Length: 270
Image (cartoon, rainbow, N blue to C red; front, side, top):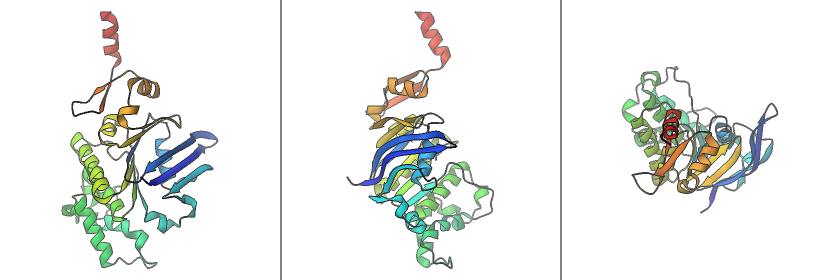
């Protein structure tokens, strides 16, 4: 399978403080690639580097076998779309207008939308099942609806790679699954390579084709969920007691955090 993203010896520092340290890995085309790890491990910094927002002083990154530095801004935006963890929602844009902004990489210098742009916008809203919200204002929607609007805007770019920073954060269980199912659908039906940062290890295990586990800006483990999600690796990375067993849904790991009070009870029984 051909590569969508290649990263070699990537490092990044804030004010001389290392955040990413000598990372090397490949994201294959069509992957559902999920980056996990504790707070402060460099997940968001890595994603923002992939999105071209942060410029690394060391290392090399390629998009479809071409150095990221060689792309013009609009050209890059036609290949890669980025959905940040937090987006402003207090502006009075209608949903349809916001989604249509995803066509900016294709607009002329006058910024005039074409019929094809409007058709792409409607298709993105239908794909994310928000077309019935087209005339609503963003600040009138629920958190789950807002997240799907921002994803629809990214889909409207017609990217080959979609980068998302914790798209299920602060959502209830139903909306979390809805977003993850949407990403799976985007991968399988449109062939988009999805790269996501997630704090939810169990969601990552259920949906990710490959996982990257980071700690302190370094790669702890990389591979299939069943290979890297073992309790020794996770306890070392997260610094807390965990249980890892097989999910009742099939041959995939299930991770359970063990609160301190249960550890004390087990010790007392001995």
